[in-house]
Image (cartoon, rainbow over all chains, first blue to last red):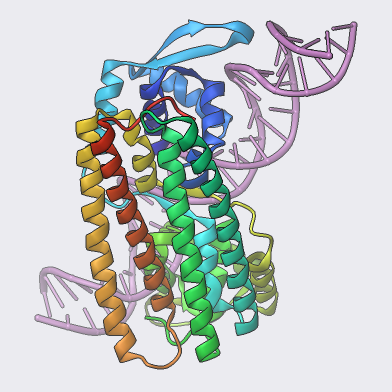
Amino acid sequence: VSLRHALLGLLAVRPASGYQLTQQFAGPLGHYAWQAGHTRIYPELAKLADDGLASLIAEGARGSRTYDITDAGREELRRWLLAAPERGVVRNEMVLRMFLLSALPAADAGELLRRIAAHCAAEAAQLRATVRTDYASEPGPLAFGLLAAEFGLRQYQATEDWAHWALEQLEQRGTLVGSPA
Amino acid sequence: VSLRHALLGLLAVRPASGYQLTQQFAGPLGHYAWQAGHTRIYPELAKLADDGLASLIAEGARGSRTYDITDAGREELRRWLLAAPERGVVRNEMVLRMFLLSALPAADAGELLRRIAAHCAAEAAQLRATVRTDYASEPGPLAFGLLAAEFGLRQYQATEDWAHWALEQLEQRGTLVGSPA
DNA sequence: GCGGGCATGTAACTAGTTACATGATTTT
DNA sequence: AAAATCATGTAACTAGTTACATGCCCGC
């Protein structure tokens, strides 16, 4: 139940309403780590409050309901974060596409690899710009967004490098797939 | 509907039974790209056959049922793979943990980063060994597993580097999170 | 006063997990 | 003959998506 812990983590940084949390998932968090829409977030917040891990601390304009994490919630979050790093859920459509490359004829595979490389390069360039701007504007403690941006940057760079490597292999061998391992 | 396409991709490489496909998901495929258990795979195979994208080509010992991809299935797979690289589903529990680092006190965050770095280093080392062995034993066309292993290797390396970078930041600043972006 | 973004929700559906169930072959 | 592994499935549940629905507040 990862959404639960994602919400606890966000509330641990600062209290927020369901709407604000939904916006966070639209950023790098949902981009690299975990996606969620508001229709899951609202019921889960209610459940969190019900279980005593979060509590409703204010109701504001337009019916907004602001929640904060409780001590029990902080404990649960810490327990989850520091638990043994067993493999959790992994689901990534882009990566799946890469794995299925070998099912395509060589020409198509090459085309797809070139697109992947270009896409990653573009994303990395954008993140680099973001990092430069944010870093310059905030010389103090490292913001959540920077930690995430730096991670995304390195991830995209590695993927782009891999795509180029795979293209080289493809050119040298004329085919990508042999007998599976 | 990514599981559908994952199955089509695997069948495109070679015909297989539900059991064999399940085993593939237990390997690097399920590790980095997309997880699936047999209880989802069997019904999805039936649906694929129902929709004319795969077909039952043999029934063997112990009631095993071998499927192959059809021409319509190959077309659908190609269409999906070469479609615009919009952002698909992303869900990764390990990455989520990293993003929530900032919700922990500095000492705990450091501990977690050190664990992440160690974990990634160990995984990368194991993959390096696999790549060396497989590569040596198969000098011909590049196997599916090698493509995947190389990807995992680079991904782990990038994550380990990031964790070390984050640790440095933590040591220099004494805290990880400031005001979120 | 009205258009757009804020803010929360419900209902119906699809996807995925966990637990349970069963039987066939191969290995020891 | 027993144990391990092969091989497929069903049922009940949990998680997540899509479509729908509603009302409030702020700026123009």
